[in-house]
Image (cartoon, rainbow, N blue to C red):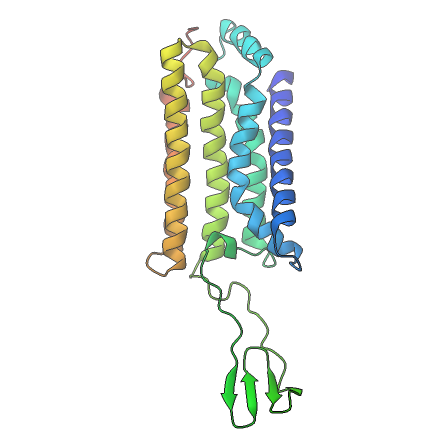
Length: 260
C-alpha cells in the first residue's frame, strides 16, 4: 500500500461518513420526535451502503485522481489495484455498522422490515374502557386506573426469524459491493472512449439499482412472512461475487495491465 492508497482510503472513508451524517441529520429532522438514539440510527442504517457507494465515487471521481491513475497505469498498476483501497475505505462504515447491528441489541432493525404498526387497543366493558396494551382502565367518570405495568417490549419483537443477522449481513455486503462497483465506474470512465464510458455508467447504475430493489423486495417479503429474512442477503452477495470476479479475471481487473 502506497501513501497515495492511504490518502484515497482516507478520502473515501471521510466522504462515506459525511454522507451518513447528512442522512442521520435529515432523518432526525423529519421524524416525529421522542425517538431513542437506537431508533433514529435504525432508520438511518439501511442507507449506509448507498453512502459507501457515494464515498467511493467522490474519492476517485475528481480530475486530479483520474490523472494520477493514468500515471499509475503507465507504471504497471491495474485500475482494480488503484481503486481497491478507496473502495475498502468507503465500505468500512457499512462493515462496521453491519457488525454493530449484529452484536448490539439496542440498535433498532425494524426499519429494514417495514410493516403496519398496530396502535393501542381499548376495549369497552361495563365499567368503561380497558386498554390491555397500555395497562390502564378508564371508568365511566373518566378516571384512569392503572391495571398493571405495560408488558416490556422484547427486542426484535414481531420481526421474522434471523432478522437481525440478515440485516447486518445485507448492510455489510451491500456496502462493500456497491463501493467496488462505484469505484470501478468512477476510475475507469476517464480511461475509455465516450461510448464505453456511457455503457459502463449505465451498467453500474443498473447493477446498483437492481441490487437495491431486489434487497428491498426481499426485506418486504420477509416482513410479510412470505420469505425468510436470509433472502435479503442474496442480491448484495451476488453483486459482490460479480465485483470480485471482475477484480480477478478481467474487465478492468488484476490482469488488465494495458493503458487505454
